Image 1 (cartoon, helix red, strand yellow):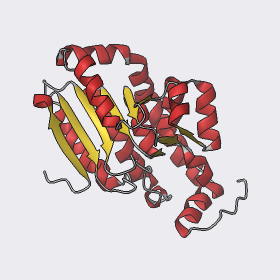
Image 2 (image 1 turned 180 degrees about the horizontal axis):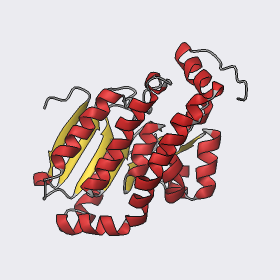
Image 3 (image 1 turned 60 degrees about the vertical axis):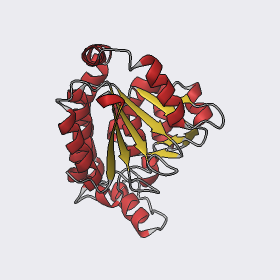
Length: 258
């Protein structure tokens, strides 16, 4: 299959697979890109030598997030289905995952990084869930944030929409940060060589299922509930639609608090 919005690259004789979001500068996780990612994940199901799946963004930024125009009321169900299917496929794959983050890692981009076992970032990285600024909320992050950084930071990031820099991401246990002047992939590559490559691929998958049993169960059970809350309650409200439409029109939203 020919990919237009991602690159799929194999390293270490098939032990490491990179999926590179290749639509800079924003690397927006639009439906077409998600379709390409999901196709790669389907193909990897039978790669028994695979030990680590790495997500990376081409250019200066990891990802600005999902496509806002695809979150309008008429498109939201399609978008959420494609986005959430990616997480379900990753659970079925069970291979350990890593995000290599430079620059902005926002919204759906942060949710993809959040899902990963490991995040390696450089000093330019900024993580955030700004959906509330548009009058909406992030379904995957609503499940995963508290599991990764605790309820207090989950409340903070999801309800304020603020971003955290690399230093704060390190402090709250969200990411490992490369040394000053060192690229995030350079740091990650050395860590992979030491901690992942010497291991058995089959044992890594089984161990990942074991250590993430609660994490995977919560995603499988709660993400459909979040999707229902988003579509049946949030998108039936005035303000959620106003926030999305105002962003698209590049104007300030006019909230009615309903």
